[in-house]
Image 1: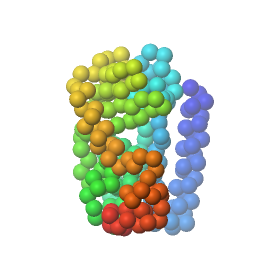
Image 2: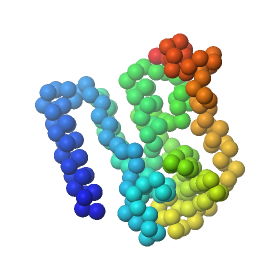
Image 3: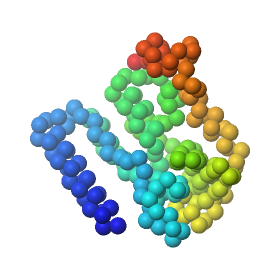
Image 4: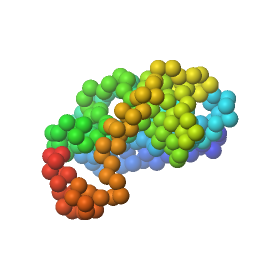
Length: 203
């Protein structure tokens, strides 16, 4: 635990140095700063011998800081649950002039706008995925479904139906192109496909 705390203090110092340098060089007003992490770390918080990350979808393994500094925007505290998927819409709408509906290219939301208090979210681990909504978690594992409370894995969830799974998976896979093929059968990363995509989202 002390090693983990020491690493946090060390990272905090490094971030502080970067912010100070941006401020003293006058670059802060022209720089977007995003501080976040890909996962949290559990230290047996629910007493069920879970450690680290990747073994469940409680907040102890999935809730991370997300601090975004956007020049020209008033400071704002968002208490609703957010997602890393929200970063791209926030930047595209706020700084890159994209005017399309966010749903055209993302399952996230623009954090500079209205953020839903509760919305379904999909998270994935190495071998399974979960749908979270409010305090409920519904996990699809290779051997079946499991529900629990997002704050306490020992407490059962109760409001999510397995009928929600097909709807959610249809939504999150609508941007997926199998076998790396683009719309015309070519590679999805080709310049032609990329140009079409840029035009579609208004770049």
